[in-house]
Image (cartoon, rainbow, N blue to C red; front, side):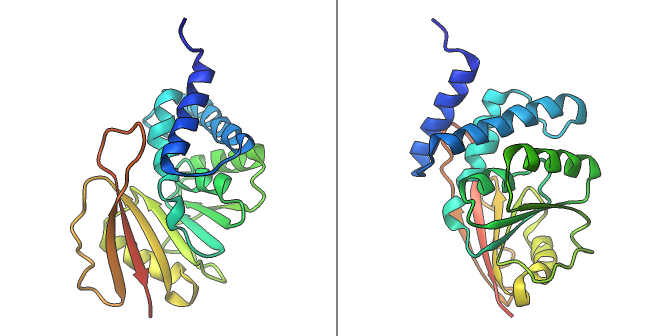
Length: 213
């Protein structure tokens, strides 16, 4: 007998979380799947992501986002160019002790984000509709995440003014192993970490950029 679609999603997410080595209670797993349901519903009208099938969203969006959870640092995290809330919303669900800000210049996407944050009860998540170049928070952030935002050089120039005192950690998610064009640029320390995303048959890498004045 075929597995019902909702149970298939539950099983796929639970398996992926186990293989990522994360400990996540059933309530938070339900919240992650609620996010997928909400994203799929809004996607029919607002075209928030090219991925349409919730079964594909689990590895492509949820598990991919959660693969960088062990690398986050600090209390205040900015998800730069968050789009539909990736990786920011899944990370906020699994790490509720941190304060997340989801930043995007697209009003349509930030409208969805505010609805998602409210429905998922993410009390420590803020949504900001602004261009990154014009956004100047006070205080700055301890850690910045990006997913398909820009090239590494552009990420560096945009991210540094957004960090607390111009120093902190930038986690840039990439596909194929990127060239280390930042390797010779002070003041940074750059490393590339291969990511093993369960149920996702494609290359994924995390570029970890530590910026200091």
